[in-house]
Length: 150
Image (tube, rainbow, N blue to C red; front, side, top):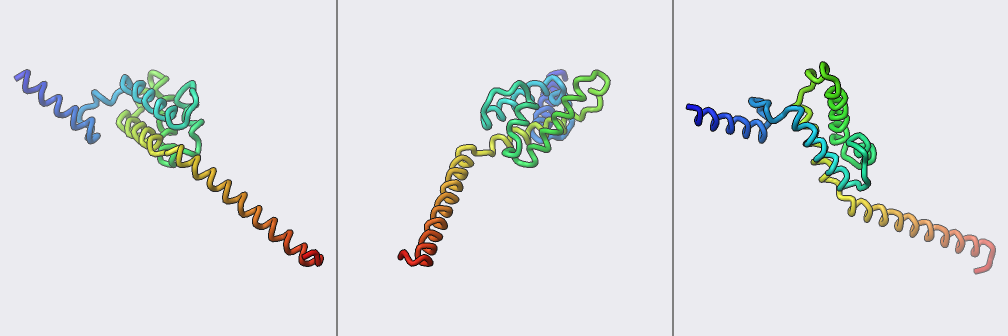
C-alpha cells in the first residue's frame, strides 16, 4: 500500500511540474524559488552580459531589449521577492504564478538573439550613413549646377 501511495505521489508531482495543474504544491514552494531565481538571473546574464548583483539589477540591465511579457513577468517576480522577504506576507504569494512568471522571464531571455540585434543595428547605421552621403552629394551637384560650375 505504501509503495502504491509513493508511486501515485510521484505521478501527481510530475503532472504538476509539467502542466501546472496545482495538485502537488510540494515542488512550487519558496525553497525552489531561490534556485529558479538564480536560473532566471543566469539566463539574463548569459543573454545580456555583465555581472549583475541580483535579479533586479539583471532585469534592469536587460531593459527594453527583453520582450514585453517577460518584463511584466519580471516585475511580478520582483513583487513576490519583496513579499517573500517578510514572514507574514510570504503567505500571500501564489508560488505557482511566480514560477510561471519565472518561466516567462527565462523563455524571454532565451528568445532574444543579441548577435542578430547587433547586426541589425550596424546595417541600420550603414544605411543611414549611405543615405546621408547620397543626399549630400546630390545637394552639392544641384548647387554646382545652380552656380554654373557644371
